[in-house]
Image (tube, rainbow, N blue to C red; front, side, top):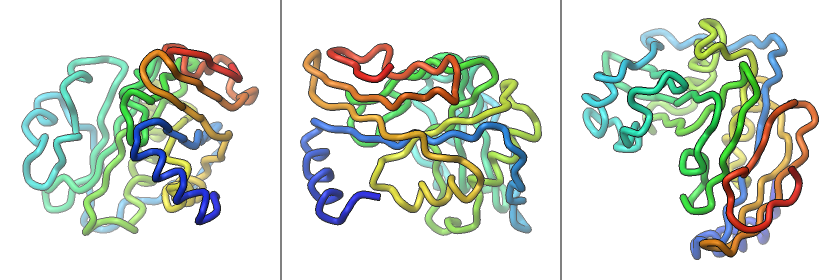
Length: 216
């Protein structure tokens, strides 16, 4: 966890869109007691036509989808509903994850991932403010693993390194930190530092990043 001064300095630099630092977290398939959805909530996969219908409506944000995932066999959206209202969702991907689907604040400083077989990447997770604190993300991850969506047996995700609440939430359901991904610069003048990930054979980070990549 960064110190208050370090966190503040990073946020100031991040506002200039010159730095993006994310924490990489991993669940290795070890049995976990995933939280069950609270009473009144329902978890299911969103079909393509329903994603288009709900995007930006009934409280669901425009970020639900930009259309690039539709239709794709290596992407799936899992959602939680309360009284037929979408209150939380996450995207799961496998194979190659584009940099624009994995960034904290600056899309041009996103980090691409090439995932090993049977590893899913969790991204673009959202929960309505009125329904936070009910472990809905954990419930959806339990749905992912129970139904082996996309053939997933292990999981990866990232979040901004200053987002301690997200780190704790994912750690609580069995995901462990693998280090920080540092992306600095702009345009072709970029520098990337990635953590070494010997526990995840075949994982490649920032393979499409311009400039110098250190750590792979």
